[in-house]
Amino acid sequence: RSQNMHLLTFCASILLDVPSASGNQTVLPSSCDDKGFLTLEAGWAYRSNPDHYLPDSCHSLQSVGAGNVILDVSQGKLRFDAPHLHFDGHFLIEGGSADNGCFTLAGDITIGSRTATVIHFRRCTSRLPGGAIQSWGRFTVGHDTLLLRFEDCSSKRSGGGFYAHGSTTIGGNATVNFVNCSSQEQGGGYFTGTNNITGNASVSFDTCSSTESGGCFFADRKSSIQGSARVTFDNCSSRSSGGGFRARDSTIQDNAIVSFHACSSDGQGGGLAARYIRVIGHST
Image 1 (cartoon, rainbow, N blue to C red):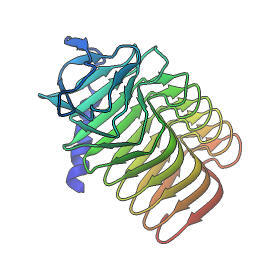
Image 2: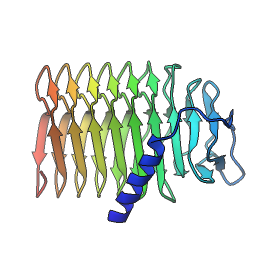
Image 3: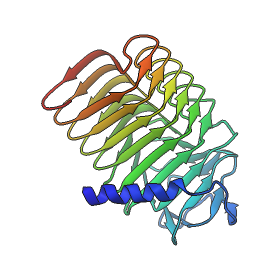
Image 4: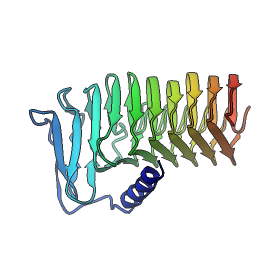
């Protein structure tokens, strides 16, 4: 686990230094090869067309060569219909002024990777729920070498970084970061119907905010944080309840750790607000 975490930290530092523009630019293909792979050249920027659609036969995006692949979705979001998505390599997904989000996931989605992979959403904005990702089915993230990062993303509705209408599971040793994300409704970073964070997963929120409840994270129905999972909230705020985290029904159990630092709300619960909460086992 220690080696994986060092590797993820190294990968993240590479991505954060990537410029938003590249000398090599082209249009993103709308189809994959006959095995379902879309192979992209590292060091290139691929631009999506408005409402760019990849059919359910496309299940894997992989980069070749050293460096990062830039997906420029400032002119239109990407829609995926494949039930399982694999990303292999380093991807920077750049939003912009289109105001329609970056990714739409139509069905049940599992995001995994076969190698050390970083998926970094930056400056994704939407007038609809989900500044970076809008998911309508079950959404699962779980792999030892996957880092998913949302930075400077916003929504005029709920889920400034990530909106999941159904359920989400974040497990394995996956790492998910939300940095400086905001929403004008609920869940400044992350909004989900039902949430499960498990295994050795790590989820962190830094300087996210919402106009309504759940400055960083809003779980509309149930939330479970279990196993050896770690969830941290730093500098989160809301103008309603749950400056860091708002849930209707929340369970923290096993050896899970949830921590809050410098979070605030104008209503109830500067850090956490929940109708029902259970802390079980050795959790903190």
